[in-house]
Every structure is written in C-alpha cells, then in structure tokens.
Amino acid sequence: MGRWEPGARERLVEAALDLFAEPGFEQTTVADIASRAGVTERTFFRHFADKREVLFAGSDEFQAAVLAAIEAAPAELSPLEVAAAGMEAAATLLQSRPDHEFPRRRAAAIAANRSLQERELLKLATVTTESARALESRGVPVVDASVAAEAAMAAFRLAFERWVTASEALDLRLLVWERVAAFRALA
Image (cartoon, rainbow, N blue to C red; front, side, top):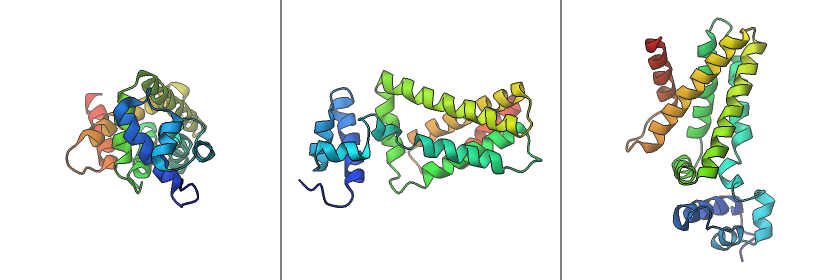
C-alpha cells in the first residue's frame, strides 16, 4: 500500500466521495475507503476521526471564517449586512477550495442520507447561533441579532443549493447577496 505517498488525505476524500455515491454512505466502511485510497485504516484515522468527518472536517474553518468576517465588518452596516458578510466569507472559503467539485459531491452525499442531513443542519444551526452571539457582541439587541443571523444563514443555504445544482459556473458570494436582497424586498 502507498501509505507513505504524499496526498493521502486527498486520496481518502476522493475515495470516500466515490464510495458514498455508490454503494452509499451506510454501506461504505473505513476499510473500503482506505483500500480504495491505497492506504491503511490507521492512515485513515490519522486524518479523520470517522467516515463522517470526511464530509464535516472543514466545519471549524467555515465557522471561523463567518465569525471573523462579522467581527471585521464596518460598524455602519446593518445587522443583516454584517451577518451576510459572514456568509459571504463562508462562500469565499468554499469557492477557494482547489477541488471545485468537492462541495457538489459532498452535498449529494449528505442529501442521500438522513443522519448526514441532521448533522449538516446541526452544523449550520451552530454557525447561526454563534453568528447571533457575534452580532450581540457588536451591540445588536438579542432578538435583532437572532433574526439577522437566521436570515443570513437562510440566504446562504438557498444560495448554496442553487450553486451546487447549477449547470453553469456561478459566484456563490453573489448568490448570497442576491438572496439577502430578495429577503429585503419581501420585508
């Protein structure tokens, strides 16, 4: 096995995404992933705690990008604009990945499995809660902070869904702001 070859993490991700697509997440074992990637199970566990982490390993980085953008946003922006700036930072992070197909393939794997959907919703709810707290620390009243954070996350989710299903190349950041504008138009 080529466990000493460079790129083991990338090969593990690629192998997992292939296997999650067919035969499926539940039917795929860590041993299957490691074998497909040409590494040992021990190598798999050096990179990921379990097979779900192949899909969720970037959650901390995602949240950190959102919170850093909220903290750095200009004071004159509205709470919704500040929260949306956080979602724009998340969009920038996703678009900067060297593997541009990863978000699409990840979304497909999650959509095909109820437990992964629940985990994704929990991750997004955590980011929303932390975004609201970050807005509160900027002096935004609690209810306004919660509404702004929820609206920005809803805008992100709708934008992301459009982005991963589009047949043409789209800018996720622009899609986020389009959804924010749509919310404003409804208000």
